[in-house]
Length: 326
Image: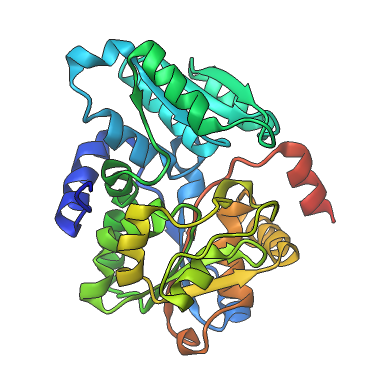
């Protein structure tokens, strides 16, 4: 069993990746505060290099590989944001990277990997196993596998966003009463909670998900891992994992207060509001936390200081145009 990350290891990761990532802004908006019935502090990881928080974890993981072992490169599997994060981190460190991606992944994400020099191997979601393909490539190349979430270095790297958030709230003289963050595998939300030191601050952390794919919400309610039914889908492609990971569940059952969930229609509306009110492009999975703040905010968070994570902005242009123009 790998050792779970701690607040201290996340703080160390934040220092390690500081030169490799952007300190993303925290913004306010009166119109969204009014709609939510709370004071929202919105951290814009959609403005991170590569368009999502994933560069944080990928950078921290690759920086752990000794220089004399980097020539064999890395292998990862992802529908897009982790893929782009790994490709960019590998490029910066002069390492080859192979990314196993579903054939229906958004074209903008596949293009982003290739633009950074990453090699892409496409697979069929229905007939092939991305894990089996990745293992085959790791063995053939002698490369290092870079998981998307269930890895202590990945979780700690994602948590650098929480360290930043805490610094920014300290600068604003504000303590967050609640934080809402999307949850797929759970690397970001749990790293964030550790980095922000939410338990020590008394800040409640809520998982945001699409209502048809709410494994974290149901797992936290049941006190044990609950898996999504096969074939359940949502427009939130970036956060559609079958169930919480082993490491992330071990952290989440101790750190997270509960789960929130919204419909795809409400996520589309959150994307529209992010564009009209904040002038930001946010992908569906990246807008899940904002949608939950606007449409499923817990009663106990009304009138309180609520942190909201916009986790990514890598949306297919045609899909974004359709949603914004609806």
